[in-house]
Length: 505
Image 1 (tube, rainbow, N blue to C red):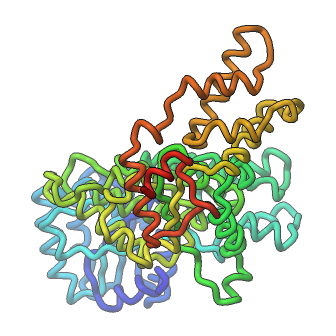
Image 2 (image 1 turned 180 degrees about the vertical axis):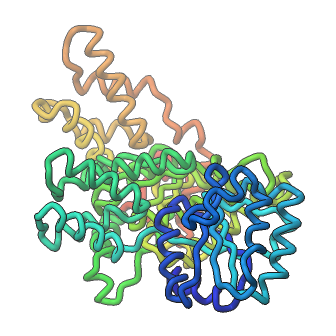
C-alpha cells in the first residue's frame, strides 16, 4: 500500500495521532495536503516551535514557542470542522508531562471528530506512555517513478533529452536519496556543464557517500578491484559471473528472484574481502561496508534502532552490495553475552531480514571461524551459497604472484620465475604472498636495484605463515570443509601441501 493510500485510510478510520518519521518535511507535507484535499477538502494547519501556526491569516503565529498552546488550538476549532494539524519536530516535547497528558486527552476527544494530529520527526522517539495512542506511519524515499518524473521535469526545463538507457541509469543511481538531495545534486550537475549527462552518475554516487557518512553506521566503500585481481578461486568466480546480470530488468522478466547473498568462510588472508570488493565492481553496484560493532550503543533500545536504520538505509540504496567483514566476531557466543539480550535481539532482527528481504541487497559476509557462527546463520535461505576459501594450491599461488607482479612490474614480469615462486611457497596465503613481495621490494630498494626472484624467495624464507603458527585451527577448518557441507571456492582445495597431508593422516 502506498503512503497516500495508507494515510487516507487512517484519516477515514479516525486515527487521532499519527507519527511520521522523515527528514523530507516539504515532500511529506505536500503528500498530506494532497490527501487532505481529496478527503473532503480538509483544512491543513502547520505548526513549528519558532513561527507557531502558519498558512491561515487568522491564526498566524498562534502557539509560537509554546507546544502546549499548539495542542490547545486543536480544541478551538469547531468539532465538526475536518482538519489535519501538522506539528514539526514535536518529538522534542513528548517527554514533557503536560504535553504527554494533553496528547492522551486529545486522543480520546478526536475519536469522535474529523481531526487528526500528525507529528513530523526525523527519527522515532516515542515515550512509553504514548506508545498506545500514537500510530507510526512510514514515509518512503522517492520511488523510481517519482525520480523519473523529477528528472523529466528538469530535462524539460532545460530543453534537453537523454537516451532511455542513460535516463534509466540516472534514475537507478538516484535511488536511496531524498528528493531534496536529488534536486540539489542535479542542480549541481546542470551548474557544472549546463546539461544533465550520463556521466553525472558519479556526482550522484558522491551525494550517496555523504548520506551514508552522516549515519555513522555504514561506510560507502570504493570498489576498484576486479574479478581478474583474484588469483584462483575458480569455482567462486564462475558462480559470481553467472549471476552478473541477475539484478537487471531482463532477469525480472525472466522470473529470476534477486540474489540474496554469499557467506565466505575460510582462513585469514585468502581473498574473502577482496572478493566482496570485486563483486561490487564487476556488477557495477555501490559497496556498503557494515562494521557490526557500530550497531551496538549504550542506551536501551538504541542498538535495535540502529540495526533497523542500517536495514532501511541499505534497502533504500538498493541495488547494492552490503559487505559484513568477520561476522563471526560480532555474533559468536550469543548465549553467554551479559548485555541483557541486546546482542540476541540485534542478531534476531538481522537474520530475520536476511531470510525475508525482498529488496536487491546482496549481502557478502566473511568469517574466519565457522564454529563461532550460530547455526541459524548457516541455514539455507539466509544466503544463496556458502563457500570455503582455503589456502591457495600451487596453480593458484602462481596466479596470485602473476596478479601482483603484473601490477608492480608490468614491464618486467617475464624476468620472474613464477613456477618456482609458487612451488617454494606451499603454505602461504594470498595476503602473505603480497607481503613477501613488499619485503623483496624493500630488499632491492635498499641495494639500489630492482628486486628479483631470489629476493622474493629470501623474504619467504624469513616469514612464518599462519598455516604453520595456527596449524590446529586450520586443520579443523579443512576437516569441516571436507565434510561436504560447504562448496569449495577452488577447483582443487588446497591448504598447502604440508597442512593438507597432515589433515589426511
